[in-house]
Image (cartoon, rainbow, N blue to C red; front, side):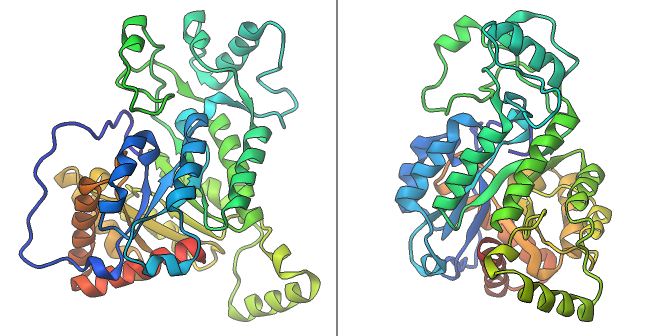
Length: 392
């Protein structure tokens, strides 16, 4: 979900054919996708070759869908990854494209104050969190009544506590994103019932962006929750590479690593002071995946500083990283710099099935070629990386 308006259902080219067989038996993993956008495709899961797929929730309407998927196809333990079946890892969170539907009730002057005049209260909120502030009431009348950020985070916490493998995601920052225009009656009447409500569904884009300050408030709440529960996070970032790094770094400020001896001493002191469960409660997540990473090699270097206390993983997808020669060249430069034990692969697709398997294979093969790995070695390495990202 890294490219705005990406529908993923255009006419498809036939998948590439390879002479050498692909080692699916070693375990192939999709670190990030949006199957909850097209729930009907779940019927294809039993026929897939991938070992596990991480399905991201993005907004109010798809949180329960992801929970339903986990109930029937979820990963319960590391042992699930050794079975010859496709399992689901859940990601719960509020994507930056939908964060305007929340209001920060921790703020001294929240943008939304519940009132009998709901439309007036909505107007105040959406004019505050969108830029430029919309003036046509028809635009915000079509938008939902905002939900308190604390309420959404509390609900997300309940879902995470019910599933010890689930991660926080998809969350992040997006500079160029613009909201779609309001639904027109003729378009709404023929909308595809197979699509999860709440998305763009090919509507024209409006001129309205979401204030970066609001995106940051929503992201910070998710990062704190992940730190509290010791969960991995899948992070979205578009045209914000430096900004996103600085923001993430603010979470672990004061917790930077300062050399092996200092680290060992600090761990021993903490072990005497607190119970193991309490040691997980930190203001930053233990593991972060930068999904469909599109930064240049300099952006990779920022995240390789030895002082960073969280494990940073970089995930790549055919859809976003191999879409053009320019994208491929930038991706190659980035992958060469990413440590071997921090690479992940994803599809970022909205449907399960053969296409997902095909695109995962193509990205795996591309990474192995760039890194100079033979296929079995590369697939095995990435499988180990994925298990470390999910389970720690």
